[in-house]
Length: 466
Image (cartoon, rainbow, N blue to C red; front, side):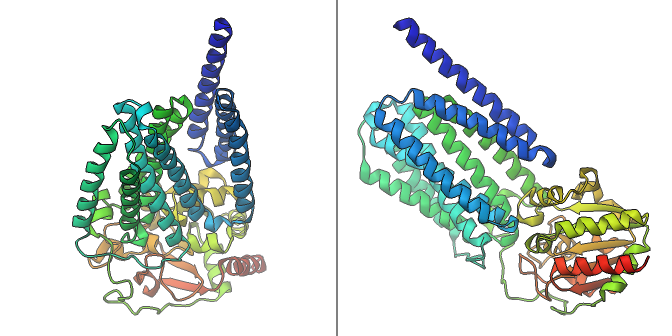
């Protein structure tokens, strides 16, 4: 019997090891848009193996019934929702699901802290950290989800928020130490701890400027991973330890890269109010709403007889689901001998990688897609820069206007191209609600209308030139 038990435990450890390897391979393959879809399946198989292994060691028969029921309910809801959501809402959905992961980890910590006498002080400490990180990620991600859905359209700063943050963190530290180093459960203190952590997550998200929101979502993703990893230690579950650690490491690195991409320090984004201002105040020196309009056939002729065209897709392209029409347009230009390339800003589409996925879905060759650092110097050699629904990421005031909330954020140098053609839905502002002087430049012409319809007009006009 002992030999059978040892063999069973060994098989469980092997299953967890295989699951861990699949997690790592899946995460590694996500670095390429062409491999991203298969990487999801690889990581999913790893998770399925980890779940089956966990079910086999669940001592309570009731758990073996409740766990699959909960899984199928959650998976069914997610499947239906994912089939209905558009690609433009994917960033908001990512924020929501990330928050739910943090909330689940916080729930596990809550239950384990109610059984404080069964754990050592070190494991209780891990549970406290997991509860804190998971609760902050849960509340903050839900607020970010609402902001991305435009349910909350403005940043909501409040006075002396640094003092408020310090006071909340001090209380969390004191209550957390009591919970960690007490052998008995304290339900009231535990509830207070979780409520304070939830309030901290909400208060940390509300003041964040829209342009900086993707950085904060990435931070919450890292916190969710931290919470899952610590709860894995508490439960003695290797799969949770590894998966949580991977998510924490990847999320932390992504947060640093995102902050660097928008030239912000994380402390500026979270605490100093950098980028938070009067959302309704027009930018100094601009005739907000003035644009030089152009007809589709004129814009088509400019691109058809150019030597090089650099395309800058943005959120407007995503919301119009115009990536396939854009691919058709660039194919026509390629057939005419025009060199085409795609310039992607790190936060294009409101989340990192979103625009790359859309273009890959349309069949755009990956070698034609370049990020900001690789292509920015090429705009001065381009005859035409075609901007499709991008606003903040091509705003030259980020380089010159110290009063702009975008000041200091790296932007694509489309204004250095020979001419600029902008496809724009209306004479409005971008996601950060900042006026863009690019649209007033003599070399910039704007084709108003839905991006998909405008691209079809350009395609028709180019075909008519033959």
